[in-house]
Length: 207
Image 1 (spheres, rainbow, N blue to C red):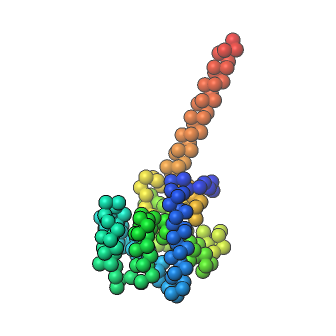
Image 2: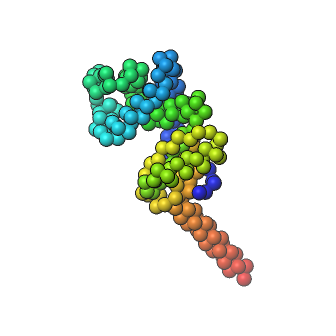
């Protein structure tokens, strides 16, 4: 895996900041209720088991064309009695501020905050193909040895990578994918070609 790190430019910095702000508020409310772990699990389930499987629900809740009171009523119908009051109230607050589209960023920040408090670190690994459980365990163990923390691994499949892995720890990305390697090779080749052309032109104009 390449050891070159770069800031994850593909992530919206403004939404990341809002995600952190809202995550801290949610964590404070959850800790006060003694439900930090539960709220994190519920928010993870909301993203992976609900919104990813029912994208129309997310679109409705984030649409500027849907009135605020309709969104609040929909949240009550969909989740009242099915999740903690802490999380449901939080969803209503974000709906009132038209920030439900930031939930993935809130989840990412909340996971990191909860893990930091427990001496853990959350790592997102993107792979071109699904990773077997033994391979996941080996990756988590190796990362744990390097980071000196207990690692929780979140694996995403991205066929565009072609092969290799992209590892995201916090806001830092370690890109060891085949696609990135090919891009680096292309960049180097273009730079070498340009240099050769410049040298040829220099020799031509000097004669």
